[in-house]
Image (cartoon, helix red, strand yellow):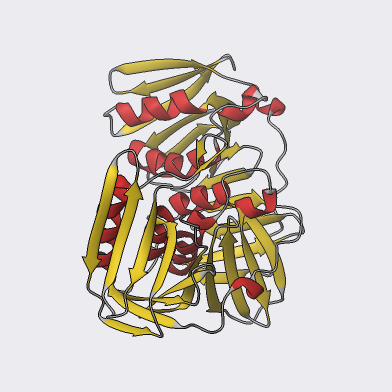
Length: 380
């Protein structure tokens, strides 16, 4: 293999291919990037237990393939070198199929390579019958939901985001049992499906499409999802098991409705939570801080916390509108509320409450298809 490639073009594709590189792997070869050069195209591949990524570089102006071939190069070191060098073009070639030589201006770097024949064969999903969504829609879906997934492997299915399409109404749900994020979309005509995508895969998918503005094709199989955009295919495994029915925990009636300016509420919650006691589970912090929302008889609203060790905090916040049958005090994780609020594009949000021991709902004025639900915390 002997190629010369424009450095910026190589970096652009390495920024995508690195999404599939594991930090460590029981198979050392998976820490590498597979290069495969044909007479016209250069393919780069990376893979871990959850994700596989492949890019196809076809550029007759900025890519010159002098000799075809394949190899596997140490991923982290190769990317670090390419990022640090300053030359406009990079020449990559093999020395006796044992060493990759990187030539850049007056610099020369040598990396020990691995045999491409030892790289596992990746079965990508067949590219037929795609569901097409714009990248902005997919980005919004991920940002609005993935933060609410579980970080614990006790219930593996909850570490993913569920995508359930019934009659072209796509419901996307994430929950960790303490909160829930749900987004609903009308999509182009497509067959029904119900899949759960791992949160880590969605995080990497979001990074991969971050700078892309255009359509994304989604291809499904029984246990995999593949997305295709530009010259990239990004494949992830799906989580096994049945996602829980969360529809019953979303309240249908509310006794109290309070509207706030989103930014003012976020700032007040952040200030009060500085002194809040932590909620713990087996000596591990599972939430950011626990605070209380108090609605008085005179409709004034306070956010407060009591910390026997550090001190207390209390702040009155002015809502834009209040509808309440009576006073109400409810405790919850400020981290959960802040993350929920930041998922909305709206400048004004509404909190819907029923009882002190029942979940409450957050909605945005301009985000009609998004619901955030938070379970209360008992504060004795």
